[in-house]
Length: 437
Image (cartoon, rainbow, N blue to C red):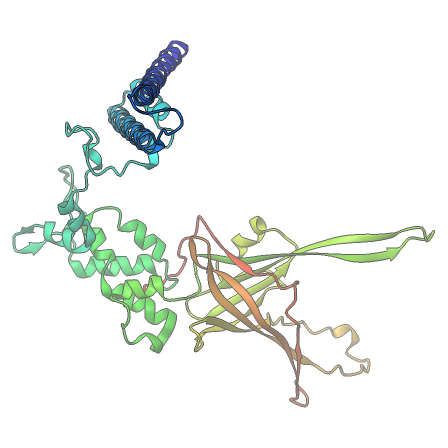
C-alpha cells in the first residue's frame, strides 16, 4: 500500500509539473511569434528601406512584447503560488482529520509547485473561503480571554449556597471532596507545598489540576512571601513589576531546585621515567558543585566524582560528605544592573577525640588556624534558561590564627581554571522541609 501510495503521489506531482512546463513553453513560443510578425510587418512597410530603417518603432514593439511576456509570467507565478497555497491548506485539513495518506499527497503536490510554500502561508484566511484552514483563523475573542487567564477563571467560578466553590467533583462520590474545605485551609495546604525550601515548581504543577487550584497558586501572598524569603527588605516595593509572581520570575536570583556545576580539565607534567627516555603527562578532571538554599546557606564541593553520584548527596544540608564547605551567601546588585553573589564558606568542623595514648608525652603545640574562603560570582543567563550561569569574579582564602587573632589573606588569580558554573536541575527534586512557607 505504501509503495502504491508513493507512486500515485509521484505521478500526481509529475503531472502537475509537466502541465506547468508545457503551458510556459507554449506562452514563450507565442511571444516570439508575435515579435517576429511585428518586425516582419515593419520591414514590408512601403517607403522604408534597409538603409534608413528607424529602429525606434521596432524597439518600442519589442519592449511592449517583452513587458507583456513578463506580465504573463508574473500572473502565471501568482496562479501557481495560489494553487500551491490551496493544496497546502487542504493537506493541513486532511492531516487534522486523520487522513494522513491524503495529506501526504497534497503536501507533495504543493511543494512540487512551490518548494517553500510552507513559509509563505500566514494562516489568516482560506484561499477559497470554504473553510479550508479555518482552524488557523485568529479568534480575537478567545485571545482576549486567554490574555488574563486568572481573571477569566475567576469569572467562570460558580456561587453555590453563598459559598465560593473553587472546584467541583467530576463524578459523584460518597467521600468528602477537597472542594468542601474553606479557602483558608486550602491556602495553608498550598503553603506547605511551597515549604520553606521555595519549591515553586511543585506549586506550578499543582496549578494544572483545575481552575480553582490555578487561582490558589496565583495567590499574591504566597509569591510575596517567596520574594521576601529571597531578597528580604530590598523587595518591599513592587515597582517596576506588576505582581509578586512577576518579580520572582523576572528579578535575578539564584535557583534552588538544582545545583550549579562546573567541569575543569587541564594537563600537567608527570615525573620522568627511571630510564630517562620519556616523561608522562596526566589529564586531570574535577568538578565544582555549588548548592544554594533559600535561607541564605550555601554548600560548595570540589571533587573528581561525576554529577550522578554527587548531586543526590546535596539535597539537604545534612550531608555526610567530608570535603564539603558550608557557609552563607548574599545577593548584590551593582550600579550597572549586574547581580553578583558573594559567599563566605568554611570547612565542616570535626570534633577530634582525645588520644589518651600520648597524654604523658610532651608535645610541641601546633598553631591552630581557621580557614575561610570568600567567593564572588556574577549571575547571568545563558540560552533559553534564566539565571543558570555563574561566572567567577573573586576567590580568596582567609586564614585566622586563634592564638594571635591575626588574619592572612591569600587571593587566587581567576584564570582558565575557574570555568563558569552552569545550573543543572534535579528532575526528582522535592521539598524536604517540615515547615510551611
